[in-house]
Image 1 (cartoon, one colour):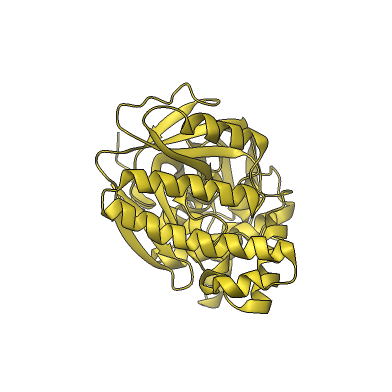
Image 2 (cartoon, rainbow, N blue to C red):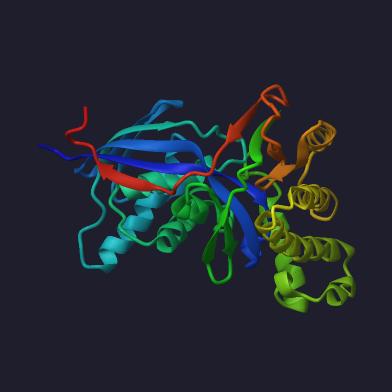
Length: 352
């Protein structure tokens, strides 16, 4: 009897700390109760997957060539992961990654800024047999995404999905990759609100923003720890604003974690609004749609703070509220989310 494998990986919402991970800064996301699931059997020389979210199936011959050329487009993430795993097995003197036949389903909405791609990558990696620590799993899947899309993403999404802890957000140092669970306050609720403006990083200004930050860092050193006075001495006004966001956002992440620990909900909400303003003004990754949604949410009773979440350019807004607030009617639809455990794989051969 063939062993039936089920691999599950959560999406994530970032409470605070965007466009800091690829500069080695601090982030504070949480894995959420929206998941991507891959079920099937290992074996053979092809990866055959059907997706509940996409009509076109994937039939991928192994070994993978260029993941960026694979069709359908969602299969590029699968191909990137397969190429990473193939490199591991060959380096270990084995014959390459085994194939897989099965299905993909997901409750993580694509284009929402909730890391649907990272969830897919991790679920596929576990389904194909990657046995590694959360950090190594995340690092491999980060490289897979770069190979699939060409987008130089940071490691936050993959590491949050891999290392998620139920009932906790994660304070992540993206230089050391140290992960510190931060308990969720029991008297606060996290909502994700769809802005109605889909986004993809491929084709956005994401890579441009990273290049601008790297140019500033080449002049004054690592931005997360750059003295404010050094940032203000940068000759290029655009580089000043990009650097100012990264440094101030890392400071806000620390302050937000401290506010949660002190049960200071009001301060946590203020920091979220400050973060959004920085992403809007200094980093220029917000949109009029996101700005209007944050403004409307901030004016509602019981909403403590709100900000765009993820890379921006569309997607979702995250809001922190008192428990009695209902945001299901906000934006294009709101959803209450809770902190989830990280990705896992199991044998379900004999399950009903």
